[in-house]
Image 1 (cartoon, rainbow, N blue to C red):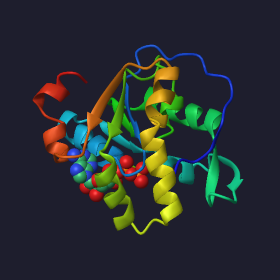
Image 2 (cartoon, rainbow, N blue to C red):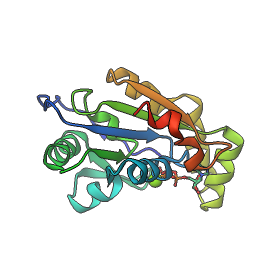
Image 3 (tube, helix red, strand yellow):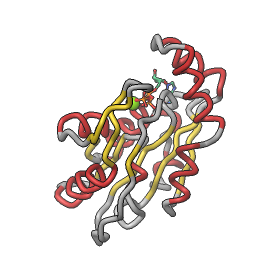
Length: 177
Ligand SMILES: Nc1ncnc2c1ncn2[C@@H]1O[C@H](COP(=O)(O)OP(=O)(O)OP(=O)(O)O)[C@@H](O)[C@H]1O
Ligand SMILES: [Mg+2]
């Protein structure tokens, strides 16, 4: 389930910053892919959900969805600060990380998964039928891809349906990062 976001004005760009965003519908493989990239390229892995929790980057609670409402402007500031001060390039794992502008991220990876497989992955997590449906709808309507495109990111779509993360992040894909 995607957390609702509160949109505010963008921050000024930070020249020279190097970050790769990994976004996508829950269950499509963001964490597995981001960790694999970090390991293969020696980049710093950033867990977006953990950052939101630890820095309390929420501005309310969505009673209907039972999740925090993320303050997108504060999340963006936290990510920009992290990218700017990191000693190595970072790979950011979050379906909200596309809130960064292209000045801060050289690439936005969007993970995708075939609906039958995604349904199975989400059901295996014990998600309710409504939560599975909501996430499948997000995948059908390419919500994350659309948001990344609207931000003007360079986008790389990676399908995680039929291969392991290591197979998806092969030499050819690494050469594109
Ligand atoms: N090629 C692949 N790439 C990524 N994940 C895969 C792949 N093949 C299978 N999986 C599996 O898909 C499941 C979901 O992956 P993961 O937890 O990385 O998704 P996610 O997008 O980070 O979800 P969430 O948004 O809830 O954190 C995991 O069990 C993972 O092992
Ligand atoms: Mg994850």
